[in-house]
Structure formats: C-alpha cells, structure tokens
Image (cartoon, each protein chain N blue to C red):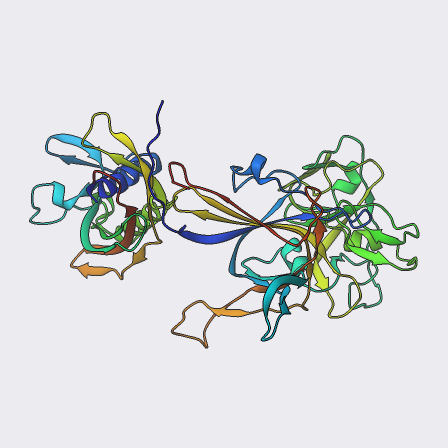
Length: 161
Length: 324
C-alpha cells in the first residue's frame, strides 16, 4: 500500500512541476515542488500556505478478488492568504488558481505503480488509479482561505507487498 | 528473458467512449474494426474513418436474439439448443449536441438549417437558402479556398455546409455519409447541402478562403463543390429514412486493459428523446443538462471467417502483465 501512496504523490508532484513550476516550498533547506506528504515531514504547528498537503486517512481492502484491492483515502489540503503585493486581496484568486492546478494534476486518473525503496525506483506490474476529487467548501480563518479535497486512491496488492 | 505477472480482477472503468463510422449504404458495406491491428490506438485520435463522439453514459447492451430447446423423449428433455433469431439493441446517452450526435440520436434524416435568402417564404425545415458560393481549387480538409468576394461573406465563428448541387439525384445521397434516400428527384438545388454531414466550424477567414476548426468528413473538397452558411440543425419525427452506422464502444480499464464492442451495422430505432439530468441532484427543479438519448438496433453481417451471421463483436485486450 505504501508503494501506491508513494506513486500517487510522485505522480502529482511531477504533474505540478509541469503545470506550475513556480509553486515551490523551502523545506529542510531545499527548494521543492509545492506539494508534500504530511506524515513524511516533521509535524507542522501550522500548515504552510500555498502548497498542497497530502494527508492519508481511511483505508479499505477488498480481499475477495484475484488480487486484493486497497482503497486509500487521500485528503489534499491547501490554503492561502493571497500575496503581500496585493495585501492579501487576491486570496480568492490564489485559491482558485490552486483549485485549477489540483484539477489538472489529478488527470489522467492513473499512474504506474513504482517501488521507491529501490534506487532507481522500479516499475511494478499494476497501475494505481483514482476517481474524481470531492472538493469541500472553503473554510475561512481571518485572512486565510483553506480548502480540502478528497480522493479515493485504488491499487492492487502485488506479490511481495 | 522472463516476465512477471499478476492475477487481474474484473476491469474497473470510468466511462464508455463511442466512435462511429459511416456505412456505405449503396454498397451495404460496414466499416471493419480490426482489434488485432488497432487495439492500442489513441482514444483521442481514432483511425480513419472512425469519428470520436466523446464519452457517453448509461451505455446498455441488450441481446434480443432468442434461443429455444429441441425436446425429445417422454418426459421431454432438452436434446439440443437452437438459435431462432439473432438480434441486439444498444442504448446510451450522448453528453454533447453536435451535428453527428443529433443525427445518430434521431430516428430519421437529419438536416442543416441553411442561412435563408432575403424575403424567402417560411418553411419548417428552413426557408430557401441564400445562394451558395463555389469552392476554388487548392482546398484541403481544413481549408476551403474561395474567391475573395465569396470569402468576405463568412465570418469566423460561422458554420458551413459544403457539398455538390442537387441535379435530380435519387437513391442514397450525400458523401461520404448518406444523409437521405430520395425515392424521386426533388427540385431544391441545395438539397444535398441540407442533408450533408460535410459541415464545419470556421475558425478564421481571409481573402483566400476559410480555415476550419476541424477537418471535413469528406476530406479535401473538389473544385466546383459549393458552400453555404448553416444556422443550426433540424430533424423531424417521422419520415422513412433510417440512419445506419458502424459503431465502436470502448471501455478502458484501470490497468490499461480494453474492452471493445464493435457493431458493424447499427440503425436508430426510436425517435428523438432528450433526457434531463439535474446538475444538482438535491435540486431537481433547478438546472438540468439536456442529453440526447439514443437507442439502436444491431443488424447482422455475415462473418467471412466462417459464414456465421452475427450482430456484434466483443473483444478484450488484457492488461499488461495480467494472467489470462
């Protein structure tokens, strides 16, 4: 299941670089694409603005199949206060921009499943796939706009997993 | 070399994609789809002459053939089964309104509403059309060469229909798609441009001619064919003409597997229907999307492989690395 989660994250990260290479984050001394997995970083007291944060929540496994299928629920959280140059008055536009980027990142709805414990990552036999995201309403905290989108990510368990 | 494999569960697919190709009505020849050669074509650019009609919904296949038992003995028991009739129906909903989806979803002939001439008498399927302009040599499937004075009559954003004059044709008319069947000659010189499927959207106009947003179904027009502006489309409940097309429906699985349903001959069996789907299922009295409902009867062909009469071919190309 970890391979599926890793593959989903790397697919979205690769697509984000192509969609908006300027969306980056300085994290642990390195400039990286503006998308991260919450459980793979040090705990945040406050989620960073203007990046996509992937949070893995629910899990279901269907074992009555020729290969067991895992369904993992991924919550993608993103928030913004707009830009300083506009005094934050562009925060609505900035969130819309992130909505559009996520909509573009999520397509196509599949990616090859890779094993990232090997270097270079090795291709596995199946594909990871998912459905359309369910976008939640905007939550407003002072000048911060936050949205959460949920995606169900499916994968087949392969031998050795 | 060695290969690894896995046991693939039943395919998981999001949607069904539809492709149609015109049957040659005069020769009664459907378009062949060979899954052995074309199994991996890009869904966004189907091989000619297949035309993508996009995603469809509520795709339902219904076999209508009947089988019965040959009984023997006392008490009777089934000795053999025999196939009494061969038949199948297909129904689905188109998610867009275009010339082709409208035509396929109507049980009758489908026509273009040609831009009318000034002061023409009213007619339910479009008044007498403004005079057609003649295509010049040098045209391609996406560019129509015109004289400068003719090109000036069309603006970007307009729709055009392009075909020959009607000079008393009878039988199936329209090329490459038969759009109507004339039992006797009609007087309207624009009749073939009324029923032609050779329509396109003008993306640019210049003194040399018109650039089209997509290729004409008939390919590069010949010099001497004529062009008229189109306002929209019209079909009628009634009439005696049946649309007939070859159809291909594809389910693309999550692991790259593909299921093909190839119907060599499909004829529409219902009149036009427009199912309404609410945009918000909680507000059924609110906005609705208007879809085109389509239902078809599959007609048989004789498979040259063994002479069997069949109405549909279902093909399956397994996912890479999947056990079969």
